[in-house]
Image (cartoon, rainbow over all chains, first blue to last red; front, side, top):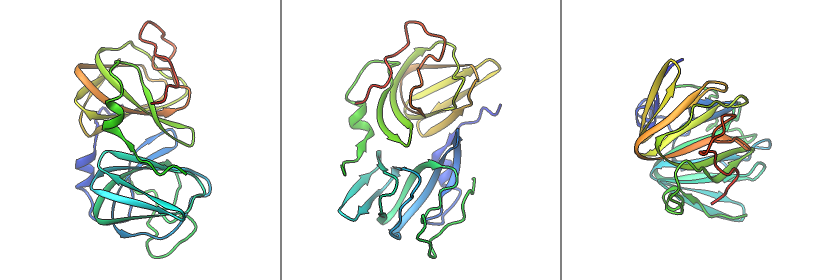
Length: 121
Length: 121
């Protein structure tokens, strides 16, 4: 077995692209992904799964059709499956995403912010 | 929908018991639990699931039969299912555990460190 811990800051230093989740760990079939956000994402949902956001550094918001949640460092929020949402961040925000294998960042909405999936760092 | 974020520090301030995981969020059937560790836990495993440890504050180690991993703030490690392990922490360490619903902290090993399960804060 490999007894090396996963260090979040070291992993975050390994990429600079925004809106492009990188996998750092897997527990059963659940993936832990780092992502750097800035600006406004596309409206989308995930029909088959909830999605957990945990802010590691910075602030962000997740807009819903009927409200929004604002998240700062050390805060998390679970977006329920099937609920349309749009993440945004005025300044770059570093986030840990937790969701099952195979989730595409833009759901079924597509567009040029759709990231390559299943990229490990 | 409830648009209140889960604040890790606020949740950690709500309890002082050690070795007694408290649930703060659920994503699909995966639970996110806070736990305060100090001293030496019992050897145990979880036959049906991996278990993710993420250190929020402090340092801890997870001992295995053939080695160990040391974790500091901002580091995580996934203990694979079925692998015997023993967490310990010289000074109190605050940890986020991620695992499916229904996991008992001591696995099948039992003993007086077995915590009440499924406690939300």
